Structure formats: C-alpha cells, structure tokens
Amino acid sequence: MASEFDLIARYFTRAAPAGLLGVGDDCALFPVPPGEQVATSTDLLLEGRHFFPDVDPKALGHKALAVNLSDLAAMGARPVGCVLGLALPRLDEPWLAAFADGFHALADAHGCPLIGGDTTRSAHDLAISVTVFGAVAPGQALRRDGARPGDDVWVSGELGAADVAYRLLDGQYPADPALLAATRDALEWPQPQVALGLALRGIAHSAIDISDGLLQDLGHILAASRVGASLHYERIPVAAALASMDEAPLRRAVLGGGDVYQLCFTAPASRREAVLAAARSAGARAARIGEIRQQAGLDVQDGQGRTLADLPAGFDHFPAA
Ligand code: ADP
Ligand code: MG
Image 1 (cartoon, helix red, strand yellow):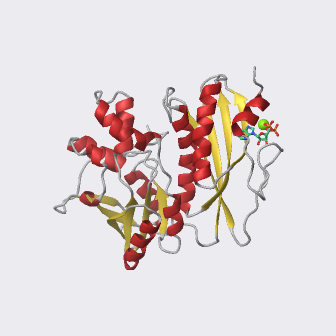
Image 2 (cartoon, protein in one colour):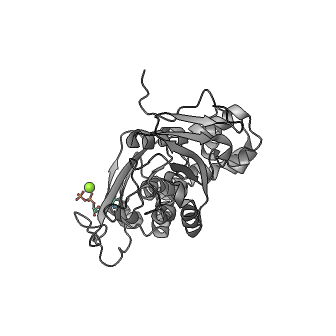
Image 3 (cartoon, helix red, strand yellow):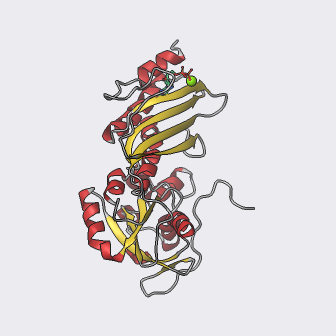
C-alpha cells in the first residue's frame, strides 16, 4: 500500500529547474526576476460542480492547471511555477498517474513547473486546488480596470463549443455523438492563451479570461473600468461545429457559455494592426467584436443594427434569490 509520501514522490516530484527549490521541503523557493512583480491566482475544482466524476483523469489534470494559466494569460504574466492541493476520496494509482501526466504535460509546455502542494484523503468527493505564480513588470499587467471609451473590444479564438459539450454531457440536450465529438475538446482540453496575453502587454488596455460567459466576464471589465460597451453579434467567432444549431441555444452558448478560457480584451482603435500582429506572433486568432463607450451598460446588436433582447446570463455560484 503506497503511503502519502510514496504518492507524492511517484506522481508529483520532478526535478526542479535550476534556481528553484521544488517538492520535498517545507516551502518551495523560486526567484522573482529583479524589477518584476509576482502575479498569483488560485482556482478550486470540485467533483460534480466543475467536472463530471467520470471525466478522463488526464484531461482533468490538464484542465486543473489550464484554468489557472488562463488567469496568468489574462494578466499578461509569464508563468513561473505552480502548487497543487489534492483531496482524494480513494487511492487509485492509474487515475493519479493519468492526472499527473496531463498536469505535467501542460506545465512543461508553459514552463510552469509543479513546485509544491498538499495531499490529503477526502471524506467525500475529489477536490483539486491549483495556485499559479507568474511574473510581470509593474505597470504592465493587463488589468480589468483599464478599458477606456474609444477602445475596441476583442476576443481570441472561437466561442460556444464548451457550453454545448457541457450541456450534451449533462443530458440537457438529446444525445448527439457527432456534435459531442466535435465540441468535447473545447470543454475538456482548454488551451490557455498565455502567449497572447504576453504579446498584448503595452497594447491592450484591459483583459479578462472567459470562464463564466462572454457577457458576464466583459461585464467585469466594464464595471471595473466604469464604462459601457456595444457588441456586434455577427462578428463574434463561433465554433464551426455549431453551424447546424438553432439560433436560441447557439446564442446562449456564444454569449453566455462558460469554460471558454479565451481572452476578452480592449485596445485603442489606433492599435488594431498591433493587436493583429500580437495575435499572429502568438499563433492565436483575434476578432474585433465591439466598442467601449462612456455610457454604462452592455448591448449586443445583430447584423441589421437591432439590439438583441433576452441576453443570456453567465454562470454564478451564488445567484441572488
Ligand atoms: P508539510 O507537512 O510541510 O505540509 P507535506 O508532507 O504535506 O509537507 O509535503 C511534503 C512535500 O511534498 C512538500 O514539499 C509539498 O510541497 C509536496 N507536496 C505534497 N503534496 C503535493 C502535491 N499534490 N503536488 C506537489 N507537491 C506536493
Ligand atoms: Mg502537507
């Protein structure tokens, strides 16, 4: 029977890069480059709430880190390292091995080594907590409060697929194996836009990653920046797999669907070419979907300039009664 320490040694201990003290001591140590600040963020993932109990453990390991790297991306911070808290209801080594594989593969891809954590037994469900550390120069972080009237609103990638995959897996939509096959990777293997966030430093005025839905997350930028926005629905890039969907659920997926982990950001209209060049350099797509204005509020217009009614709300863990 493997002990806690065997598990940590087997699945979570990797040689730390030079200059870092990784797993094995009371604390991890990592240098902060002179003149830079630490950017840090934590996300908690709970079985039944953030993932289905039978999800592929390798995908889960990937996603647990991806959602945190996405926060660094949205801040324009460069990943430095991460720590992992695990509450495990049972000891299932093949499951742990696959989870660790998915986690380390993404950590390696982004130069964000696992340098510590905590492992305990859970009396109930599985819980996963990841904290990431990044570095960014003072004044360069892409904050939520920097949007200004005259900025364009941009979004990276394509929207909608993760919401549709979630509703198919949750049984909210009738089974459709072809549609699930075409959307599932968007939900289970999100790709954090770290390179894009870094490339947008000095260009974007504000940024957020889309975890709870485009409208809700853009709403956080608007509130923090005390501005409003108009979006043009037909300019929002939609996942090709959704081409045959009905208009109402499609709109809900695009405007309100969470788990996207693309960036929504604003930049002055004078920097359009710079935004497109930054996206190209990061291997990402960026689409200009609207404008920031002085007047508060958020509206979405269709191709004829008519304002859409009944906009979907995003996800809220504690919705008001
Ligand atoms: P402590 O008693 O000081 O909390 P632990 O015995 O819990 O230390 O952990 C031993 C070492 O293993 C520490 O360096 C800790 O950071 C690391 N560790 C524990 N669990 C994990 C995990 N899930 N992932 C990465 N490192 C871990
Ligand atoms: Mg401990």
